[in-house]
Image (cartoon, rainbow, N blue to C red):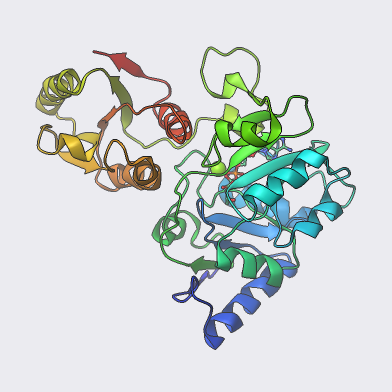
Length: 354
Ligand code: TXA
Ligand code: MG
């Protein structure tokens, strides 16, 4: 299949006439059962009509994703939540007022209108109202209910730039909307409101602390955070190996001096054995590492920068054929919880304390 690439430059300050036209065309593709990848404020999504079972089947096929892994339904107006959720609890209204449009997904009881193909056979549905203007316009033009997983091939890091969507999805979807770099860089927080107390199934930009300020006690679904948690994670997607670069990734924990000493010793040894080595580092450590490829993803205190740059760094190691990667460890407070969740999954929970 020929994939049309649609470039949107003006997205944040309104659209030109040509851009409006292109987004209308992209919306029509979705309405007619095709797939369009598009930017959101978190990561790029791979969109199809959430109410069309055939579209959801196509999404699974394009990603190479197991079909028991449910999709998030994206809407562009709050009131549309009532069409896809059987019941909308008070807590959902409160969260929407505080965090929508934005990087928060809520799990609610599914209405009959949403096919089981979209929810992976579950009787619940995931709903999100994104803030990215391109996403909102496309959802509107696409009929109002757009199922969209992250626009990567299953198992790869979620795309934060259109070039990675093109790499994974060209030839597999009708169109890709290039709206530049995303703002946040990690997928939305998922909170399950069908249980009491509400439960975080995937940490993200909207932190536990922020949710608790509104809702009181909020739990976290543990198995998705650690390999030893026991039991199956309640977000089916969290059980799959994820975000992984092709090279082997290890997180190194300890004081900055010890981490640098360990990484440098190991990297020298691995290079001598013919490996290509890489490091994920904070700005504070500039010049401290000896390895083939070093990615500085932000200052240690600037969690937003670390979140935004992490997935791209993992992809770049693949582009540069790095075979062994070491990463510094980050604080797991606030947004750090989401950062460490993704990093540990990417590393297959290989952590070494030095
Ligand atoms: O930021 C995001 O959420 C991005 C952008 C594109 O919006 N989307 C995204 O979708 O990350 P995806 O499909 O890559 O991840 C969705 C996660 C999966 O782990 C899935 O198992 C979980 O949400 N999920 C979806 N529906 C669910 C449900 N009804 N119950 C529990 N988990 C659900
Ligand atoms: Mg994903």
